[in-house]
Length: 71
Image (tube, rainbow, N blue to C red; front, side, top):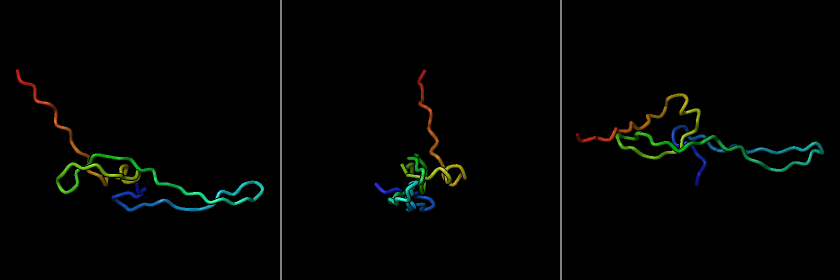
């Protein structure tokens, strides 16, 4: 399961935890990814998108059709 945004390609960034005693351990910062049902090339599809792309409006969300009620 990759932690990559399917719109902008944002990936985890890497660095170090540094304690008060200056002990250094590796860590990683993951992007805030959300699974969203979006329209991709005219087809509703589940994609992983970072929240900055969602907020910027780079994703066209799928429109739910209301159920038809026969009377």
